[in-house]
Image (cartoon, rainbow, N blue to C red):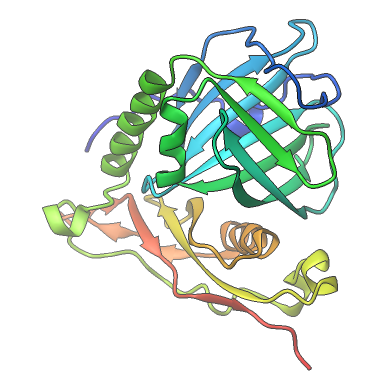
Length: 275
């Protein structure tokens, strides 16, 4: 089994720096610290602090374990909404054309941390390699622009980390022979009517999503990532939350019959409003 170099602090805990109110779009905020790339058990994430060193803003880049999408995350130390809300925004690298992106705005449970999470495709993320700034736009809220440096090296580190993550979770285990029996489980019966996000219900939003799960040796869901977006981030966010809290699996087995880490692609999860 490959060995992961891990920091035990997860990204959600790292993104807790106190920050100043979001500034109007102007000159890019300067970084106050170098990029830090965290090799976690279930994710890779690059973090950097910006603005006032005494009251910094945190910006993070997090690729999905399969490398197909990236999340751009902005966080600040203050209370966020108890229930995630969906906003229409955009991401712009340098002077490039803005990339339309729905985003989730939420507060971390147990911490007074407000988070904005934008998801873009890996192909869109390539624009960041040569960019010297990125602007995050979230509807009617003020835009924020971060100065970017060392992006080719940073993105290469994230790609290397993702490749290691794939090996660690035996993503190609059946193909290369490290998995003899796949993990088994059923997520179709764990959802209830009460799980429908209130904001999506109010907007009469429906959709179908699909998820990549990281299943540990005990059959628990250690990580959940969107592989097919429903088009409604609130639905995708709730889908992962329900699956992580309630889904149970029989773990995969290696050629010696021992439980081993594995990945699992869920069947499509469809959200429909009755009536």
